[in-house]
Length: 293
Length: 314
Image 1 (cartoon, rainbow over the protein chains, first blue to last red):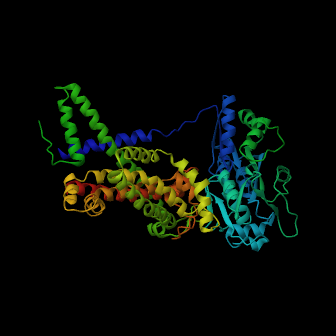
Image 2: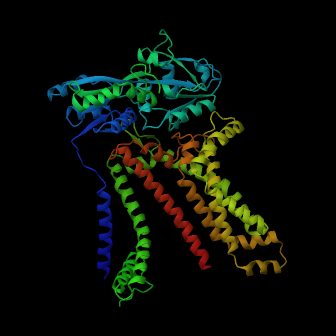
Image 3: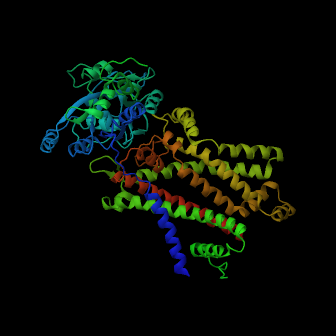
């Protein structure tokens, strides 16, 4: 009797596991576009896909495992578009050519991070090196960078945010993606850009990095200089677009050859006014000025 | 007809009873069918707990292919996106314990005092009102409590203790104390009220005052229920996610100061699970944190359960 009971129980569990396993999809429809790549661009890509799926019969599916993953998928021919928040490396281009892939780059948006402080804090300009020391936890008091005697409250975003990754690589690791530098353990981890702005509004000593679109009149943005001798540049859409603002970068689509057919239609949509309005809505910087809706 | 007997419990007892129900299906179909349905529902809840455990383990064990168990349980660094990634759970565990411990220290005395007042002292009308109000606190969504913590309580704490930021373990503890209060008050209230009348009357007949009766007769008699109330309160606090995510500052540092920002296990899972690639090391690590949390809640509930049973037997 005992074995029979046990068998029944095993059957129940196995059935449940099978039912749970069936949830996975493994379809590859004909009329669809695969977009793969940058984690930073995931939200943007999804917003484009959602808007495009509403007006077109082509289904766009987007995933964001990282720029490198997207580029290698393009090289292996498993994606139509690779989203990348960096340019392809020479080695990757060589790999692509060897496989008969001709990667063509299209700039689809810009990304710029503003550094914000509480308005009562008189510090309005910092060099990249000072910023780095602050966000590494080496400089702990505003006095050391020309401010009042006030403890610096360093804030950072959670690790799943592309903003976190970009800021870490660009500022803490001085652009070296293989660097080891990390935010200090004592840094407040904030789960959204809005909350980061709120924290800076409330805490006199706080400093945060957020996408340009999040800056409100209740916080002050800081002008950044590449070094002591270089000019301090305020973060604006103009300074991001002419690349004079140091913490900014271009966001790309890579395609195999000039886009054609359904891929071209999607890329054209992304570059259209409607696509660029979405860029602005997701708080990136559009590639040209677009009228707000 | 085979008999299952009351001695048989657990899975084999359940399936035995289930089989005997199946064999009765032809004799009294309607009644048996309903009984069968209820049995399936009862059995399903057990099955779900087992399945949760199975899936938690399935997705957390692969972590230990790359990270040692001691590296996980004893590591001081939680840097999931570093190269190589570091998954030390100590700061998160300490954060959870600090916030939960703080909440319990605040909530237990206040909650017990409230329960004693509601059960023993308050006139009937006041008691009815208080009970309803306390239970209403349990209905406030945690994100609302988090918002109150963020906008009102954290600036207070910042000013009172003259801190650089108000997002601290203490802020989390205060909010969680508030949230676990209804659990503690209503279970402790039930425990106090279920103390037999004879005890109270016997004590009063000996000439004690009301206060003496409460402190030296009723509370000791209701002890097991009160322990259960506290344990369930802890369970409520340690599993809470949204509120702590909003108010504790989420700094993954190992600190034993209530006035420092900390990060809890629940907040880490909530903040990082969203965009972690499925099947990555980070993904497994978050599941391992979840499994640890499950284990802690399980032990706490077990203690509560054992102490409740002991109370019934006494």
